[in-house]
Image (tube, rainbow, N blue to C red; front, side, top):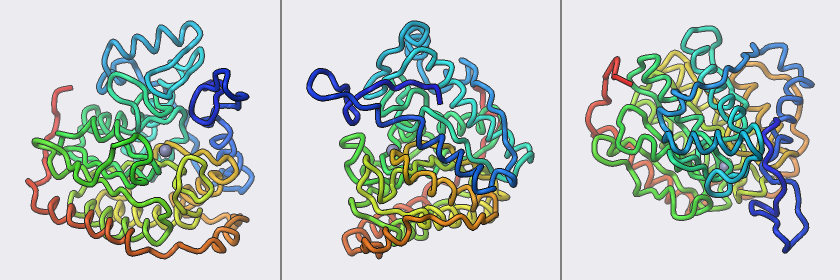
Amino acid sequence: MWHDTGTGAWVSPAGLTVQPLGHIESPEGKRRIRNLIEVSGLMDHLVQLRPRPATEAEILRLHTVEYVQRIRRMSAKSGGEAGEETPFGPGSYEIALLAAGGCLTAVDAVLDGEVDNAYALVRPPGHHAEKDRGRGFCIFSNTALAAVHARHARGLSRVAIVDWDVHHGNGTEHAFYSDPTVLTISIHQNNNYPPRSGAITDIGSHAGEGFNINVPLPPGSGVGAYVAAFQRVVAPALEAYRPELILIASGLDASAMDPLGSMMLTSDGYRRLTQIVLAVARDVCGGRLVACHEGGYSPAYVPYCGLAVIEELAGKRTGLEDPLLSLLAGFGGQEIQPHQEAVVDEAAKLVARLLTAATPPRIRGDPE
Ligand SMILES: [Zn+2]
């Protein structure tokens, strides 16, 4: 919560052109998820895990020495800009290590059977970070680092990442683009952020060909389109790949209330997506599922989406109602539309391709 993104105007520095606001990537949404879990009573049914910081060696599994040293140096002074649209203040290096380490802690707790599944409510987010620069508020590649940890430190053969953040998970895609041992699936708003990223035709390369799936849904997509994408693309892809662990890059910015997305999800929509992924996880990997928090910029609404996801993970309904559900139902447009279905149809063909791709790799004990 102490990661300081400073002031800005929307996602850009305010400069002298307009009055500064607090930066849109702020602690508030995350803090309010935590507080709603507390107030709803759900916390009584959860096991709280204390995160450890990731080590520099763990970060270097995906990031360059030059980049990591630069962030550490700047963070020790007054902070600065990690790359593109990723401002940070003093101390953010250590906080970013804690965010990545929180995801690793969650993976270990699930693989060790300490908990059934886990939600790592971390900040800053990670899925836009590239190996040599920060992007889109992300410093280190938290979810991707969790996958690498599961593979290399814990010896898993196959890990899958499902990214339901409204933006494309470009950093995650790049980390595993030629790697068939991590299946990456991103469902995002077409051409939101980053620009020209996340095309349906980007399917991976070399040995990784077929193991990257992008579902770039049109703006305005709601629960119907998302559920169709999860039932017809995500679930069958996971069934075909049979990962030993499923990670969710859990952006809550595909909601109808989000200022950085133009999608229509509700808390109930997020609940249904969680149910679909959980059912597959139970089928293919003993329910081993870790969600790593990514984006979500409506401090008013992300708490209800987060509560719905975590209620499903915990298998416990608190009865606390989302007071905005009826308002959002009144917007209409939640049924899948033909132009949205066309994208799902196209993406479903990639699953058929995945089925005919090389047998999922079964490699153990790869060198680091
Ligand atoms: Zn996002």
